[in-house]
Picture 1 (cartoon, rainbow, N blue to C red):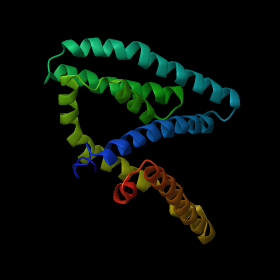
Picture 2 (cartoon, rainbow, N blue to C red):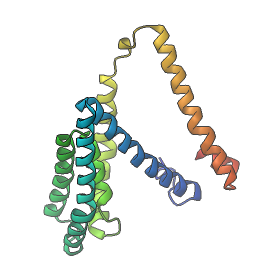
Picture 3 (cartoon, one colour):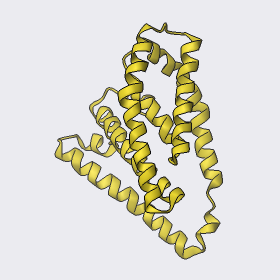
Picture 4 (cartoon, helix red, strand yellow):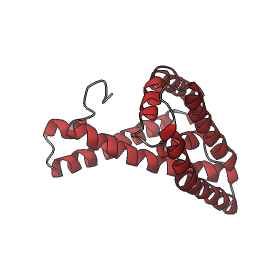
Length: 195
């Protein structure tokens, strides 16, 4: 949305993107804990999954990232082999986190986070991958999620009203503090609302 509206380089766009990145990382970490506790059940299982997840994150940051960065510095832009290996790396990372007991999307997200941002080969890869991601994978993800959602399982109108109430509370507790923080930081009213 920011890219289409040419707001990526605006002050509100930069702050919004940075805030979204931080909240996404936090949300993925919390999701990892929730999924681990649901799958494992017992506290020892959750701790085991959490320890493996922390170990995997450390391995990705301190071992895989430097190796990938060195390899990509020498890689030519437009190389199908490099693009295939990058895609395979994302899929392998997703598979590992799935096997650890955390959602596979966390592994894919982590693989994307460790890639250096300033290399020409990655800029080219991102530009080629963006179309498929935005136009196919993202809508497919939301479609599958929507199809799996069964509002009838909520069990009646009371729970549905509670669900709507919680959604309204979630929107308000995101909007009000963000707006207030933006105004404290001297954002214009319009930018504060946009943020």
